[in-house]
Image 1 (cartoon, rainbow, N blue to C red):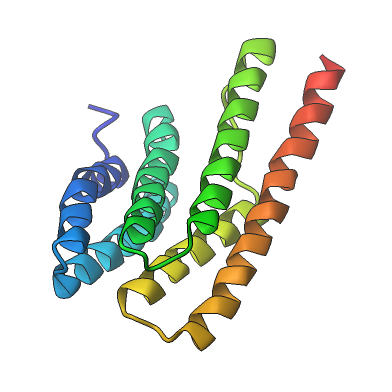
Image 2: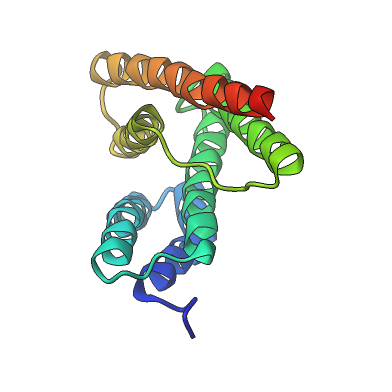
Length: 175
């Protein structure tokens, strides 16, 4: 089947591992949670690389890849807030960005009948910084190192949100 590409299988493995990862974080199994998280980061990079190299980009993959990222990152931030490892307002910023981007995608789809949204450089940077912050929290990085990176992540989230909003509004206005 065309949909069961190597890239899509890697993405699906990330989605399947999210509950295992969350349980390992809650259970305090640092080695397992860090290992799964690093595996997810690596497969996030590899699935896109394999899709391009092997010419296996699919609609399913373009839907599942960001979904896998969102499931992993949002659930990570929720658990880290519950465990009091990061402040709740960081989670609120992360979730707000995702709600805004999803709402924009939904509006764009219903107005223009076009579901494709290309990731922006700031969107990719934001995701990398979110992954970095989660990993740094998982490895118990001291606050004096973690906090500047977390604030950089928050700034990139705000900027990336606008890199989706502004072109989306302009595109809808043309319609």
